[in-house]
Image (tube, rainbow, N blue to C red; front, side, top):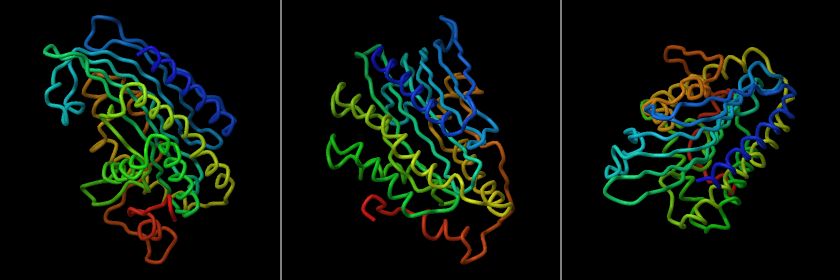
Length: 302
């Protein structure tokens, strides 16, 4: 796992450096450790900026932990591993821009090894990235999805459509029957290419993030906006919070395994609104998000 750890730390540093260059405000660095022999041991580095020029909140975390028993969120598809000792590491980020025309983005890449008593070690990878716009632009959605598709292309033609569908199905608010955003790619429990090629695929996804997101940031960051757009952004962020707290396996894994609460909940947007049964005015730019964007589309070929 040392090679995976080195890659993830380097990825975190590259992403934070690029985000700092765009924002102009340095990220805080909060290193932490969990002592040996506790229920969860390990270390990590949380990198965060709040009230930046571009990002209202942006976080990029690295963690590497070991525990005595896999939490339920990690074994729902692998019941034979329930209760097994484990080792997990990953980089997870969430960027919440101030300008409503710049979309929120999420990305994570992770590796996990379980060591059940009755068998040898079992390892797999997971991760992906997805985009959550407040005001939709077809060119942005196409660019994001094409970058994801191109990153996966060296590993076979079937991975992008498969991981796209997985993302559409995963980032879905079942209690509202509503997608969280325009998707991207998502995969979990992945080891089918073998250890080396599966890790190479993970690196391809992580390395594609800045290419997928920064051109959109540069294009939209200076668009003028007012209170109407900020108000709609805050309302849509409420959906983000609902998904993360109710459905997200990463959040549940962190909390169930005894992870660091501040780092786990760093993904939350700083300002959010909820309204009772509110809907955008039909035909408005806000309503167009739902009618034109918050539904599965083959963005990479449009």
